[in-house]
Image 1 (cartoon, rainbow, N blue to C red):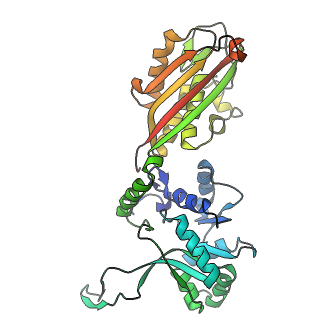
Image 2 (image 1 turned 135 degrees about the horizontal axis):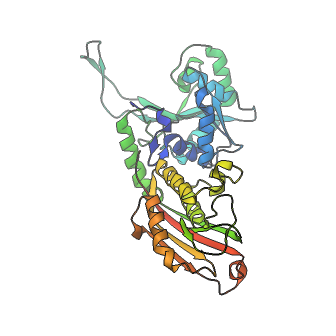
Image 3 (image 1 turned 60 degrees about the vertical axis):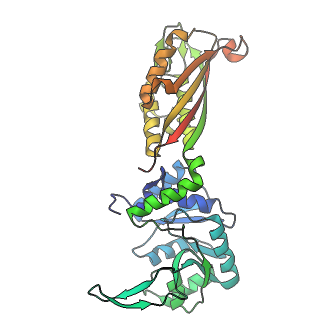
Length: 377
């Protein structure tokens, strides 16, 4: 691949390949538990990645693998209890696997003891000599190209490991063959490709674009925040210092408008809220200019392949009057988001003296943001 990082962590349509893969298994009804096996030095960072995308749970575990594929599969197998009846092994670099194929492999393993996804070979095969010249044409009848998932009874897989010992195998089906276990073929899919070359990324992007374009290309997020008034503090809204006899209470500059805007972006990304990323227990965020936090959130969106398409913000307060400052707020927010001013809207309203804002106890803010996909990084 020529990358400076493992391909499983490379972005496909703005999301790491491994995240795409695990999401499919997490959404498949026959799957009760997921074990992701990675190099030892990546256990912590991979766990953090799953947490970032809301996938880390009691049913998902990240463990260290070994030097060979079979060592890594064994490491994952060893984490499972005997109550697990069927085990599926899948390449992290096959993000286009479908729930239907996973289910078919599960059912076939239940019936036959072992099954793998595979597709019939359709191209003419040639056997070449060491000099690169064709020796002869290989009959492709009854030839299949192995894919994953490869599903097997957990007890059968454990027995196969004991029988084969330390002999090298290329996949679980090869291990089972050496152990004398019959393996059933489940017809896979031509789109269940393994990301191996850079061209595969382009193919996968096109496939995902056809099936997920309406979901992946646009994201909508809503943010809400409220802060009570406090004396002895500056009032900052949308990055603008507003002349007023009170400010807002908070760990940072308490810019309620910018906080709601940040939450809307994080919501669209599925990455929690501003408190999770910039906790008020961390002193480095004490008194911080909230536009700086917005810039960090925008960078995070960019890392996930998204940018702001437009944002709409509503500030709710009785006083002060905000209309003289709205254009400056829009300019500051747009600059932080690297978009045109026309893509940001800010407006203010009152509650006709109802509720905590009507009683002048504080200010609240709603924000809605539309993110658009930037494409593969």
